[in-house]
Length: 496
Image (cartoon, rainbow, N blue to C red; front, side, top):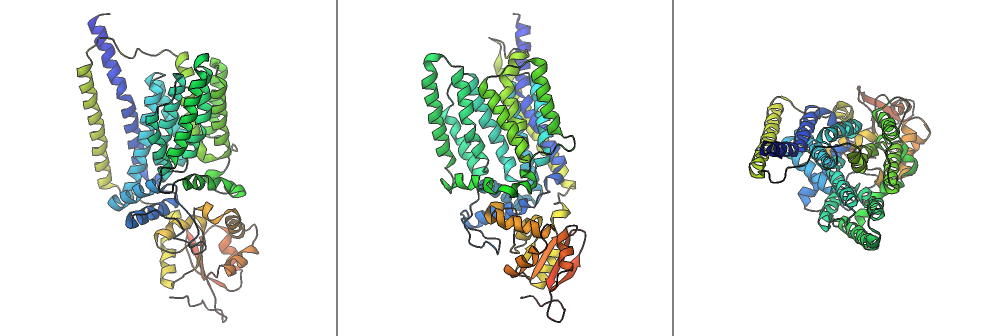
C-alpha cells in the first residue's frame, strides 16, 4: 500500500468521524427553524411549571399541587429532571429556551444514531436512515420531556445491540445511562424490557461453552439496570409512576399520542412498514429469532400507540444494522500505520467549527425571530376574564389545563391523566363531547363549578347554552366562558 493511498484512507476515516456531528447540526438547525411547531402541546406549560416549583423548593413533588379536584392526591413526576431543564431554559430565554433544548435533544439523537449505524453500514446510508427516522417522528417532536430522553434511548439500545453483535456482555459503565433515562422520562421501562430479547441475541450466537456464563452476565446486568432505574429522588416508586399511564384502559384511545395508528390515509409510518416488508423480500434478509422478536415488538408498539412510532423509527434500524452491514460493503475503517495525529487535530477543529457555526446561526436567528406558543392552546383573553371574575372552581377543557396551570388557575383536569384516573377523564370527555349530555350538569354540580372554559368548536358550550342556570359571558375563536346565573337570571357574583 503506497503512503499517499494510506493517507487518503486516513483522511476519509477522519472525515467520516465528522458525519454524525454534521448530521446532528443539520437536525438542530432544522428544528430551530421550525421551532414554533414544537410549541403545540399545552402539556409543555405544566411541565415547565413543575420544573420551576422544583427549582424554587429544592425538592420534587409527591402530591398534586395544581388541580382543585385532586388537591393533595399522591402524584410523582417521572420526568422531573427534564422539567427542571425546560424550566431553567424558559426562565433564561422565554420560549426560545425550550425550543433550543428540544432542538439539541433531536440533534444528539441524530448524532448518536448515525454514529452507532456508521459502525456497521456506510455513512451515507446511516444519514439516510436518520432522515427517514426524523420523517417518521416529526409529528411527536414537541417541547416535552420525551425528546430529552430520546438520545439516551438510542444510545442505550445501540450499545446493547453492539454488545450482542460482538457476542459479549454489556459494560457496567453503561448503567449511568439507565439512571439518567429514569430521571428524564418514564419511558425508561422500554429500555429495561429490551434487555431480555437483546441478551438472547448475544447468547444464541455465542460459543456453546460460554453461553451459560454470558447469559448470567446479562441477567446480572439486567438486575443492575433495574436498580439503576431506581436511582431517582423517588426510588422504587419511579417504576410504579412510569407504568401508571398503561392502566388507563379505554382512555388511551381518546388521547392522541396514545391512540393506535390510523391507516385511513397514507402516512409515512405506513410507507415505512411497506418498505420494511419490501426490503425483506427483495434482499432476502435472514434474521435470528431474537431480532425478529425485537422488530415485531417495536412494530406492535407503534401500531398500538402513535407515540411509539419514534421508537420504531430509531430502534428498528439499530436492530437491522449488522444484517444490513453484512449485505452491503463499506469503505475500510482506517489504514494501518497512517499518521493519525494531524488528522485528529483536523477533526477536532472541524467539530469546533460546526458547533461555532450552529451557535452563531442560533444567535442570528433569535435576534429577529420570537418563538410563540400556538394560539389554540392558549385562551389568553378567556383566562383574563376568569381572573377578573375571580372564578375559583373552573371546569376547563382538557387541552387548556396546562395553560391555566401556568396562570396559577386551579384546574378541573389537565394532561396528567394518570392522576385523575380512567373513569374521571372518560366521564369528562363523554360529557363535553356530547356523548352523554345529561352527565355534564351532574359533573358541574358535584364539583361545585362556578365557571367553565371550553373549546369554542366543541359540543360542550352548545350544551351549556341550553342548560338552565348557566350563561355565556364570553366567546372567541379559541374558547367559550360560561358562569352560573342567579335566580333572577343575571350572571352570578363569583367569589373574589
